[in-house]
Image 1 (cartoon, rainbow, N blue to C red):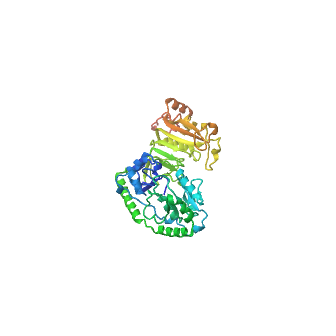
Image 2: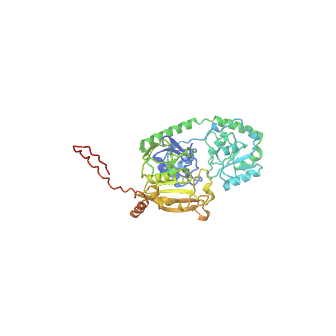
Image 3: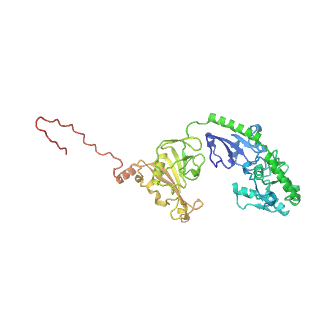
Length: 465
């Protein structure tokens, strides 16, 4: 499981593509998109780019009602319901009736949901809601402390939010859910969820919820959910994904990837080649550009693909937070100069020396100011460069949130430099500052004289001046 990292040597099942996905990634990666959004009339308002992505690629869905929004043939889209996840089930958890949270809700709140909350709390049931978004194990700890989790519809389409329900049931917590006429849960959820409709809301939460009968029924429902077997659905998914992978292998470019955009250090840019010397950031390649670089480089990336790097290949290099940390800044900038083609740019962010951000990171070795770029722009010969230098394209000040600001509020500098050829005048200026005049060859050495033939007679001693 990875965040924004795709593998070239595997099938990538992608969740959350509605938040954005680069089409160019499909050239080198097999992707199956798992749609978890409610589509169609009354559903989520999504960008056309997402629907176009689903129409042109392999898709899996959790609800058959979504499929018509992106496919004319429902048989081409596997529907895979959510099911019991044993790894979430913790044995020996607190008995349901002894848990401190009566009813827990997590998720976005809109006026429709808020009206439902008001009606439930008017029945005397307290609803606990997070004041900040919480995910992962931290959220799961709260779910295990709840007598039940409330599920109610955000959209008028009112499709059953089975991802939420399956997750909570796997954690061993009952689910109480609103049900409208258009709510059609997949087989299995009918028997394992406590349902109420609009007309039954008050009676359910006044007379039934949190009673001994409710807890007994909830334990039986959790047991039934654990026995639901999704193997047939998962088998179809595996077959579908394998077929998508074979199709992709038949048409993909099998040559080594020659990236034109490179991301250095912390952060990750999908579609770029991401390089760092620290494995913790999970880069594509572990490589230290703060050390002398031998080009070309042919390597296997951590995602299973082949990568080729040579001089002049890059058009953009970004080092958002690397300059203050790198041990050898001269080597980094010289490697950037070598990798960038003419007109290529390097974009950097660095803490401003007069700000509180300058030394907040214990790994920082330096802070920067307006003069920090002089050797790379004006006095380029100090770097050992002669035919190329950098020119300043843009410079701005950023505050602690990395948004533009005035200098007196600056925490960071953002600078963009472009690789350009030096002019005849600049090369002349460089020669005047260099001990060897910029590599001008020395006069030819005096050619060796042929050895003198000794004359007869006494030995002569020769001394060469």
